[in-house]
Length: 342
Image 1 (cartoon, rainbow, N blue to C red):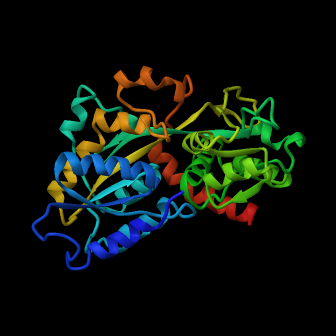
Image 2: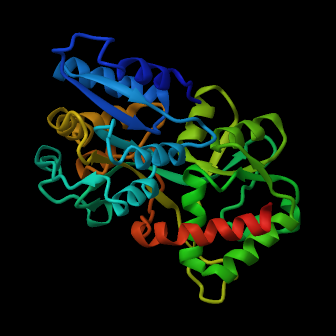
Image 3: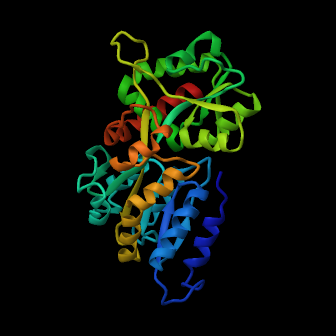
């Protein structure tokens, strides 16, 4: 979904400041957000602030993971000022590694009456602009889509289900959520049942949706923004939210639709700290929240006053998992995935 123009731009612009006026105000942004949304947001910020944004992005296949490793490698001499991720778990990893600087955005919190949701906040980062994990499906071939992960292990879905490779992106975090919710034994049992049922693996969520359109699979684990992008292109692909299955004797219980926020943070000792804070304030503003909600991604704002306006792009209820605890479960989840799926 994203070209590598951003990487080339950063490489050019960070070399001796040669690509612009040395007196110009600049900020360096590392982001895994899709290019189209990045362009819209950054152009608006540059117009309002007069600050030039130098961007570096990641590929669809590696998503946030590659950028995390880059920030860690640059810890002694940071190049990035602001970290904006399309998911929370890489951000938590960076916080744990000590590469993020605590920052409270008073301007950003003003739109929330000074009360940012506790489950979307740490001293070093803010969560905002929610997306949801869904079961994408072909509206032509699936009249009654599944609404639970357990259903996907049933014989009727044999060879008809796909997901992104779990090493990267939101699928990586989703696997961590399942280990946290179910425990490693139940997670392994689900994964083994999925493998036995012929699950297909793809390079990213967008590739999963594309495979549904091409008829390679009928159902796929993906994110809402990838489904909305498909529908914008005229593809007949729907989004089924996972139903709540709280029964203690359920084989694979569920707490319902899984919400995953974007996250933004200040990089410690970045070269442009003042400009970085201004960019973070902008990203947390109601103005930016509206841009993201009205975009093709339809990210759901955390601002209560905007919820009802964009409710059609979200499930009626959802849960934000305990993000720090889930991040701690990801290594175990990935180890199980490697053992079962590879």
